[in-house]
Image 1 (cartoon, rainbow over the protein chains, first blue to last red):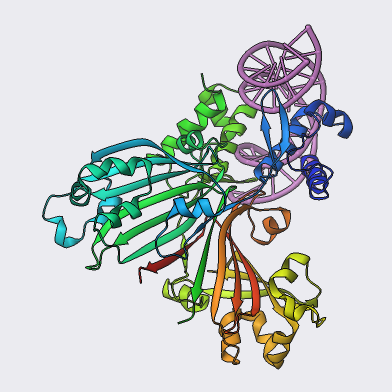
Image 2: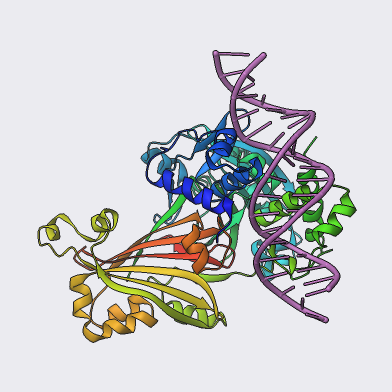
Length: 244
Length: 244
DNA sequence: CAGTGGTCTAGACCACTTG
DNA sequence: AAGTGGTCTAGACCACTGC
């Protein structure tokens, strides 16, 4: 009934689930699988593509196909502000930041509508300081962080602005007297496009977790907008909600 | 430099981004694309697979390949307890529940370690009431919800237990005097396996959002564990964090 | 029925990794 | 050099959709 490539990928999937192939193990080569199942190479490749699509294996040209190791690092959203550095250290993970871009630009309409309210709109302060940072966990790029700060906010940081390039944004804002009252956020799931695929070293279409957040000061004015795009296979978010 | 199928999928991707093909539109047939790009069918199919992997199009046997419509419904995590029904209504979405399974079982070790503390362990009350429910949003299955209630809790609901099969769990617990103090949760991202692929009518490997939550009573004892597995292309989670 | 995508084959050549 | 996966071709047949 089911197609050949599905039967084969299911067979391999169960073998992986049963521990016949352990995380890190190499699967038999395509040639070996062709003989074992008596099918063409196309069919074997389709079966392996199914497994890759399910995140169970990954293939490497010239080397082979290997069972994925899966262990996720959690970002905590419970402490109202994310202090990623501390968070990672607590889980025994090293954490470094690589700056990819730091410029003053005129943002897209979408970002403008988030950062500029009708009050501030007339003032023509519509430039923002954009930063793209690669977050490396245990030496491997795991997430891409894009932060947009209104020009006024960025200016008030003075020369500390450069510190932003190698650290997370919120702690630095607070340290410079810019109070954060609350953060409104959305967590969703997307696929890697070619650009992100390159930065995070994942195949096209790889699942990603996206955390979009807007920070507001006590006057309800937005002071920062950011997106953190993480590899869905390596990260998750934890939070606690109290009934109060 | 780049492979043919990548060039072609990138070409189509930009056409979609530029609105040449609008959401809902049909792409040219594989045969037409073969002629347009002067390549074999395999290469065209690979290019289309790239687009499917990026969630940009979906294909339907006998009909064609269509540009994906994307609009997400948000679950709110801000109100400490999720009242999904109300939440959906507010966004103008209809919401129904289909029960797939409701039984008393002995759960996996993983679930046991969540629901049973060292105190309760000796009591041999290790059975749980498991429920699998399909959540239909606007008439289409969008999420699979699995809830585990310790036998003691389920029993105290009496005949209202059956109400659970067509509604969300937490509101019913509270209505029956079972207080929820806090919820500890994890949000992550996975791929559809064959079972879920069937329930949610998505291709194998389709990205999914998983919300795992454990509810505790004021005595810090777990009273429910659940997983809500939603289509990553149709849902997202929103939350607000206050600096207090 | 014609047109669409889904499965499968056999074979060729290329790119990368390892010894 | 041998073995691995990556790309690509040409062609066949099947399954589903819609007219």
